Length: 229
Length: 237
Image 1 (cartoon, chains in turn blue, green):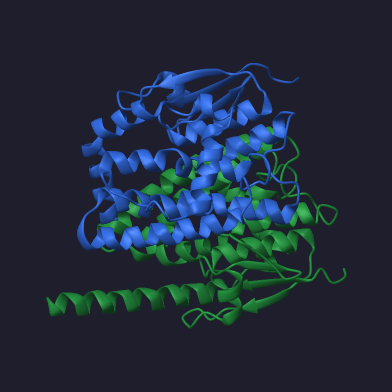
Image 2: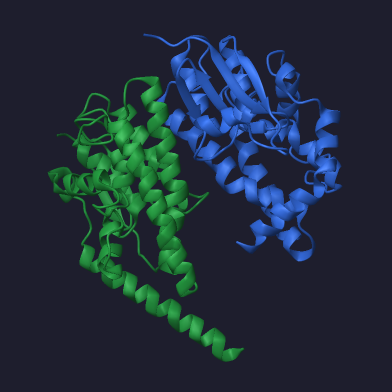
């Protein structure tokens, strides 16, 4: 028996939750969005459906629960009809999965630490961020989107580069990318953020900026803890 | 069996390489295995085929390189869907559940092993052991849910998740010997303990399992090296 009723537990400003939302919209799947106030407390619903990680996004599809944004993306692609999010060729699928893991496992830490740390350590992380961005830009190969003519899995996965990056630069006063650097990525960022399907589920820029500005100290603490690991 | 034009760059002690070997073994695929030096310089082939991470395993299929053990397993399953059993489940939700637990295993289990092996203090190591029991208990629940009363995470047959966890099996045995305790204790995690025995008894597993005695030796050697380094540091302060 097929499930019905799709709900998405998300949170304002989360690029991971955004990934799930964009995928649902690309597929044309109607959904109810439930927003957590993560800085205040986690709802019973979130704790019940994601007891292991207690994080967003959580996709509720009938009586099914799916957690972890990358897992959610592949589930949405497989469970619903509509335009394909993943490539069909196995090698291309392996490639986009590789770069998704690269983004989440290798890029996240230096990215955070390049804006929230100081001195010599910061210089090192900045260098690493630029190297990572160069590797990612190379995957664009001059195309409109990573997936080609229309948005696909890797575009969605890299969404924080398109929208969140400049907001964080502004909030912290740290310029990660000079105005003349990574022109292909810039062009792609504009394409992604202006897309009609994507735009409505991007967090409002001013509100996002205010959010980061208000929580600067908290992020500094998280970065400090990361450095000590 | 034919030539599938497959090469696997690996290292005998790596749980991630073991995963790839298990997948190839269960699918019944032939390949050329190329061993990377454990403490030596990385080979030109490795540098070329995994320039980003320079790590094993790397699967080379007709000159295309595929990196990251879980990605390799999914790739093998998709490309060789007509050969041997299917590793990923068919149903999208079952696939999502398998992928969720696979991500959990890499997130929690690996870092715990590292903490236990490389833990700086006895306290760190003890903390590692406590957390690993907690993780084992969580996996016990996962096994119960995924297997639905059958022998493996994949049901009647070995599947993706069995292989993902299976990569760590040699190290589980190694830690069991070195710590004189069971990582998957039959009293606390009976399903996992039974799974471990069953999984290791399979021919396809035995065909690729590394020599646990050698792993024990390697672990002792690493420990001695780390202890010597720590002693040198404390003497120079």
